[in-house]
Image: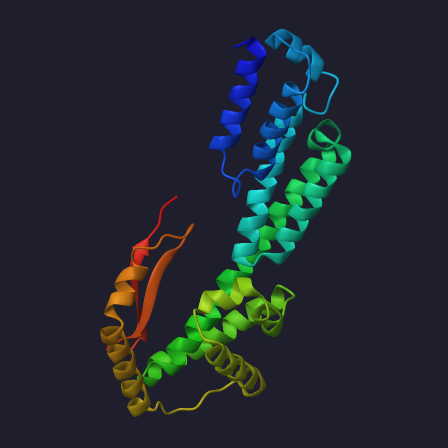
Length: 269
């Protein structure tokens, strides 16, 4: 086996090791480089290095690595529902492909685009924090039989909605986006009730004084029956892993403060 055959075999091995879902650009690069070397009359590794210098393969490995890094960020943003962040990363990928590694990756434009991603991510996180508080206040209002606690939740809800206004974004706008909807772990019907409540609350600034304790007890019994009937399914959920998440179940609590969130699986990365 000549030196170049060893290089070809090494590149094919690298491609085989790489996961196409995680590193598609690098996998493609090493496969194409191996084929390119195989089609040429080259015997030594030194000759291969000199021949590659005049081709896109010379800095192709670094370019592929950057493309795969952006690819993973696009996937993560899509999973989180960070549409604005995903859009910026898609633009970064197109710029990298059209301008090349040296022209874009080592430019001020690259830094500016990276900063845009950071700023957009921070906006999402701040809005998610407020949106999450709004939903928790909503649950406290409907899941609390003690008037004092409910009125505290009402006041907290007013503050949270005001904070959203100061951010210059509406509750309705956020509710349309996956990043915020999935925070609630609610069904479509549950989200509709949530939206209707917030809409009415913003118009009247008040909530009903009485809590239907029978309804709460019925709901608690229903969830308890469901948990018993689906014990095997719940156990199976506990075995699953997801990036940066804890899989859990929300169950109405005996405590007046509302729901218990039972963690089934915590995943650390």
